[in-house]
Length: 455
Image (cartoon, rainbow, N blue to C red; front, side):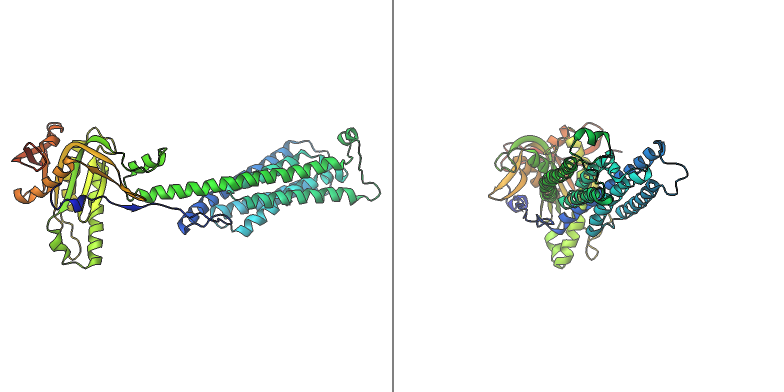
């Protein structure tokens, strides 16, 4: 490697990501941004839950409308339409609050109780609607909708709301049974004959006990499964956040390889590939930095890097390193690109274009020199222990950095090696030959060019 280049091309380091998992409303201690991510998913789920509830009440209304009525038209009070109307109004209110993200926990608990109360109220009203004894409603298949209400709470990914809904359903059904048993002290209508139970309005205590146990068992199993799913959700959010954070230190393509591999981030496994290397440096940066305060310097560099990173990324390049004022980018490694040579040239020319007329700090212009070369490199994760970074190595990387420096000698802004020109289709650019140069570590001279856009 050329003297003075080792500092610019040294491995970038990033600390290993170690999530701290503890409790979430009971199980994990997370940064606020991750809690907000989970909260956002839960708020979206509440919108879905509200839509399902509106669908259910619509189904109830449709079934009631088409079902034959056994009560007389002269009846003064038909309770089912009233219960359905109240339930529809509550569901619409809940939907409004959900889409406006105004559903606090207490409202979710209240919603669980109200949903069950309205459904049980609808079932309870059947004996009035159809002029039957109270035991009549215990046979209503509408009871099955209780399990739908319990199940949709799982969409919130919080077992607390499943449990509150399930307990409300079980207690509500107990009250329904108690009401039947004591509504007529002279005749509780209790039987031990299963056939009589199935063919009359008699009450079989064992059957009602089975319903309550089933409600509680389904609630318990679903809550347990949801607790485990919640932990997987948290781990997924943590891993997704870690991948996004990691992509700020290493190329996104490398992040994908690490997250999808069986071994994870393993150092020492380099891959040899041909690529086009682009190296940039700011002319006279040391002198410029002395005229700026540290705050101005950082702000100017961040602005500068954002300007030159955009064309590099747009033309398929991947920035491997930011070192001081220098940028090392590769085309075709680690992101495949069969047109890597012309794309690197396009990016270099556009970098010069976007920097024209741009001033940094207190009216300072950054003149950027670019070196471009094509050849095989070794790319991979390097480092030790829990500190690794992605980089590319090889004589071609050193040559590219040397070409960038030669711009000072030739009064140019872009110098391109013959290896890049050879892989560029004719007519896309105008190359002007500068001559041949000898580079240490290479046993042959390198023919170099400057480049401009073809007319």
